[in-house]
Amino acid sequence: MRLVFLFISILFSATITMAQNLMQTFYEVEGAPLKEEFSVNSKNELDGEYSSYFMDGTIKSQGFFSQNVSTGEWRYYFESGELRMVGNVVQGKNNGLWQYYYESGGKKMEGYLEDGKRTGNWVVYASNGAKQSEGRYENNARVGIWKYYANTGGLKASEE
Image 1 (tube, helix red, strand yellow):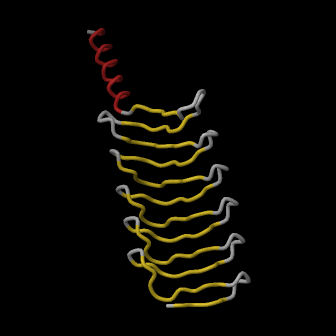
Image 2 (spheres, one colour):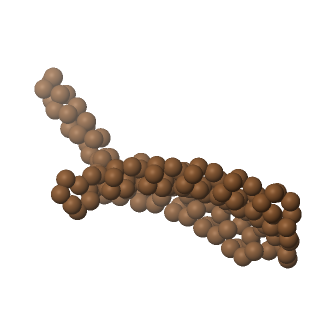
Image 3 (tube, helix red, strand yellow):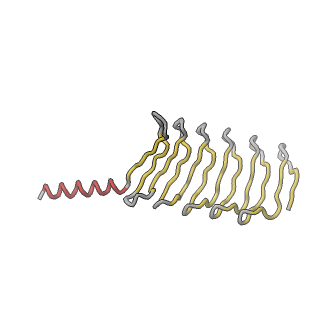
């Protein structure tokens, strides 16, 4: 009886381990560094954390998959390792607040996406951090009044 219980325990443990396998891909050069790291479920679908890397091994992107569909927070990086952009993905489409950065680390722009299309308020920043422009989008098209600012921060122009 003890042997049967041990066998069932090992079989159950192996099934759980097989449910999510960590996979890795490498660049196609000799001594290649890691290219991607991800988990797949028993149906061989991407399911869990996902990371991709530049040739030098620095992180390129990080996010999550659920049954082969990207979901949750995704982060993308410059080759220098600095954050390039971050935002939320729902059912494989960018949704919610997305923030974009200069390689120097300052914020470049931010705004909302709905099903991958720009919507709501968007703000663009100069590399020195000053607000450059702001306005609204509806269904990926500019609407309403857009304001443009001088490097000193004062309003330079507006258009509708």
